[in-house]
Length: 234
Image (cartoon, rainbow, N blue to C red; front, top):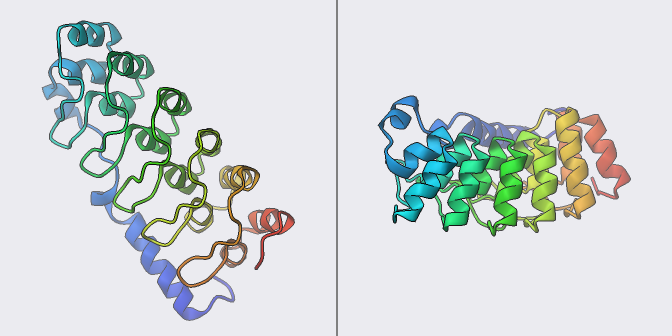
């Protein structure tokens, strides 16, 4: 971080290492062993068998039963990117807004996977874009912004996701797009979506550093230019 105070650099590196090196806090998709052991609706969701889901739901199968990681069949369908299976579960009455053991919901799972079709289905079907998810007490929008999934970010904004939620690291979606992004085209598009959506460009991190200064210190020149043109303060 050129020109950044030493304590700011150390603080950033410490938090970044926590975020990037803590697999126990990340989403955990079903393993091949788990999938092989699934039965009933979990098995149908994992294989994307919408017809079997409809059959099992009609015979009284428990739509929101959990596996060992707290995943429901709908979450499994989201992890496996099986949109039609997810649609069948939703239409049968599966709960979109449950959290698995790591506190992720269907919308956040799909957002991390950059599965725009699943995200749009979940939002249109009543998924809560304002839900607080993950061990970081964030949102689907923060997760998508972190990864530079600009189209998903735009869909979440359209779905009334909270633009300026601050997670337990002290970061908003805009800040995560800057400090955990690479400054490239995907994160530029993400920042553009957040600017156009009305995100607060001047909410600082816990060290009192605003997004424009964070972008400059990270060498993200194009993002810094975008923020400056949008009226952000250094």
